[in-house]
Image (cartoon, rainbow, N blue to C red; front, top):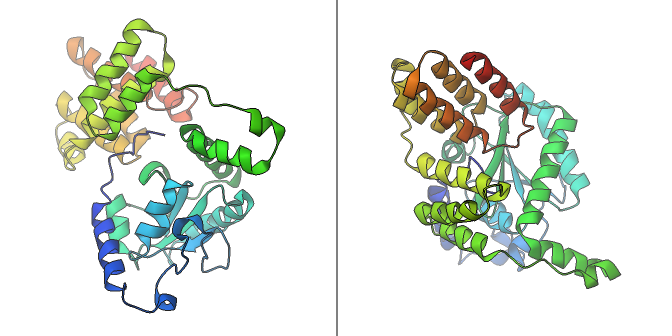
Length: 325
């Protein structure tokens, strides 16, 4: 589930505000508090529309309804505004799909005008913006109204990735179904080499995680899982150090190769993927020698963050080929 967005969004301020609000309301009558259920995130949310799987979220309820709930199921955050025309097209699609999902994921609707700090935390530049969270971290995103089949496919991939990452969920579902297949199924043993790398990544020790994945690749050069994870770790380490002004500086200095690389990382981290690819393809076209190789390798490394059949990657690979040859 690690993706280009992970680690790029700082939600600590929202967590702090939510904790403060909950502390202040601790002495209030139980019926007056948000989410009065004793089971907390395990309960189905009650949204303003009356849907079981759609919830209206504020800065005060963000911690419980989004961050904590995303530890159990993916939470898809719909950032919208009353004046936004495309939002009125996309929101009903998301609500309908949430109902059809039957609790495999939750839709959290957030009015950016009423909750500006949430929009600021996510770096929202336009609406609608849709951000998926899993394990308390943003993992995928898209902007603008999208056709329902495309949104459905995006959500199905999100739910599948969440289940694959957390085998305990699959085991619980199999046991709850009471089927013979679920009762007899056993999870394959975890590869301790990957466990070591993932533990280092959870600690934020990117150097140790990178070294662990490199050791796997030294023995198994064709291990695609390790290669993809290594690319993600290297990107996350760079994204954490990214300067917010990198894009403006790169635009002002098109011949500064280092600035272009940093700006591309910043754009990918904010899900402006096509702009990042286009920036580096253009840089390849106007450079030569070692600089060109450096940019090309960086771009190929960014490709590795996404599926090989991602349309943005396919288009950028073609553009890169034209720039090179």
